Image (cartoon, rainbow, N blue to C red; front, side, top):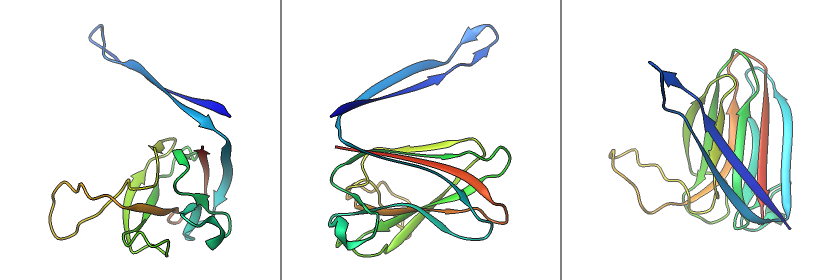
Length: 156
């Protein structure tokens, strides 16, 4: 078992005043790491990683109960991508029922803890949702540009 140490550093000085900071946290007990760097072809939605309660139910799926850290980085220097969070609202280990998409700019990263009971969407009202559900997978839509992406997933 290993410890994963994550450190975020922000360094910004405005009018001689430092507003940045450093925050760190440790995820203990890591036994599995999935890391992949890949080229996402232009105009092809590509699955970066998938999560299942029954990992034998999908080739290459990570155990949703054990994943404790996810980082997706857009390695492209000029093109943003659409990062689609595929959501299993039924929590029945099936394909995604809903999705939420965020724009991930060139050189930017998206970080999430566990995919289990961590996301929700509501198209009927703009309210805070406290009954969270499971993330089924993370897809990338690169639009009309081929881009390089990196994904790192750590599990206990």
